[in-house]
Image 1 (tube, one colour):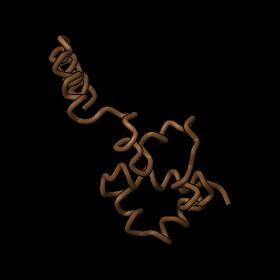
Image 2: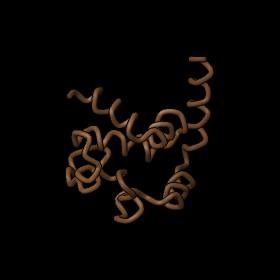
Image 3: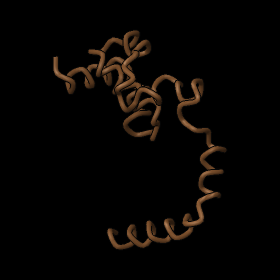
Image 4: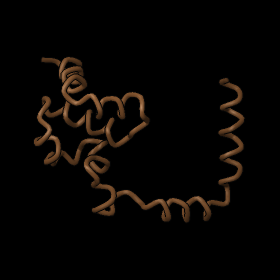
Length: 101
């Protein structure tokens, strides 16, 4: 079965997770669905995945909260506050957003 078939199978088997991932803006559930799909539909293999080359590895199954790889919200806030160009970056981003809308 291809990845699309596995994902659709997961959606049928776990509709609450799929709903949260597809329509509930749940990053965690979307990553969980991706991981399960990557592991051929096996949830246990996905939970125990050791593929650190994967871009989503640090975000899967709560790793970012437990191993310190991803900065905390407070650390991000400190980074933002210490950036002297932050206000200019925000203004540029908002201007670009208005142009595209």
